[in-house]
Image (tube, rainbow, N blue to C red; front, side):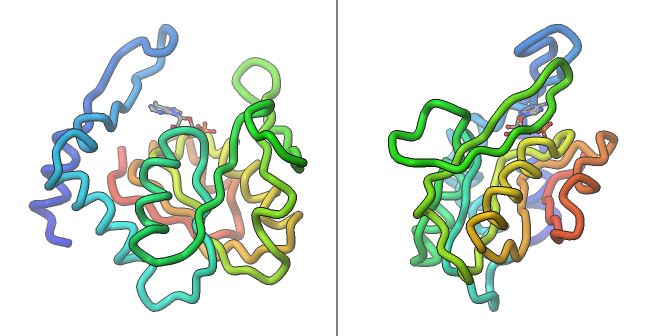
Length: 176
Ligand code: AMP
């Protein structure tokens, strides 16, 4: 994808100060979803990175990872797996804890969502501290899945989230 398309995507991501709480500069991707050309361009970025890989499933993180991840899975013709915040998934789950700025949170995945030996790619809208996606990586590995790569539309590089994901390769398209 050309740098022109990337710049258009970057320009469309809206900064919302002090959301959901004071001091957080929220990167709002809804203007990207709202524009059919930009939405397609964002999905194409993920698809280009997936080309040539043997992928059995795309795993998306609650909630904006579902928007990008499920569309990517549809285009690739592979299954989609949601990883959700604790208490949202109806069937038997595995749970992974991770730390937040204050306290802890938990992510869950259905026990039969990823099978041993399956190759999966993790998708989310944004990599910040990496806590959420590191918890997702734990769940994928617990299930016996091979996590080929974690892909994010946006990376907040100053938070060094990709360190949390080591040794998983991390790809992001818009870096801040
Ligand atoms: P983290 O676990 O710190 O990497 O946080 C990643 C998750 O929180 C992703 O699912 C993001 O959607 C969300 N998130 C964290 N920080 C921001 C931010 N500044 N703007 C938008 N979403 C964020």
